[in-house]
Length: 285
Image 1 (tube, helix red, strand yellow):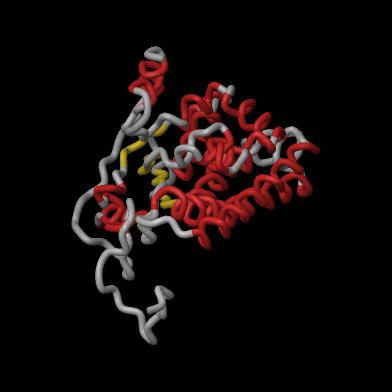
Image 2: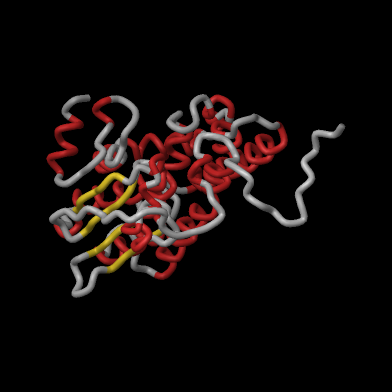
């Protein structure tokens, strides 16, 4: 008897597909339960978790605050995706796609909802006129790499990360396929960063803030257990240099721990309502 899977003519969900995040997967959208979202005192209300996609936004917010933008003060509320918080009626009203992060901006006459991490980065960069160059050439190059990341990261996360680290069984074909693509992406970044200090050129932008939580964390050994060894990340020295330089930024060190519930005790800050919350955690290092 062959073990080859033969797809049915019409797919039906017969049960969970297994793996770490199996209970989160379903073939329909929308809320599963009623629950209101909490609201803090600042105009910007973030609902998130410190996954790479969540870190993008908190890093930008902390960079904006470090640059003197007082209007970037924010409350960061924990969305526990393992418990299905993203399927509450309140969260779905902000992000119908039920994915973190999601942002509500109450600074205007009517609240503005922003969902999808790349859209939030672009919204905040334009709102504060920071970290997105004004010149058409530099702005376009920044957006080139921002949109590259949005399209590339699913191959790292949902592709390589899933089959290498989270799938209930390890199969050679998907691991090889997504490992090859991840290494191609790392080589692309390595070539680009061999020519420029940052992705869009010589200026630190939202393209770097979007990409670092995925590929920076990967080459620094912060994603998927021993994946850094498996992928031979030492063979990408320019990505290593870029990743370490960005990690050295105080705002990055601050933003990466917001809405985090794992790691060292000092790294865990499930909720953030003022700069003092982060200060207290970092003093514990």
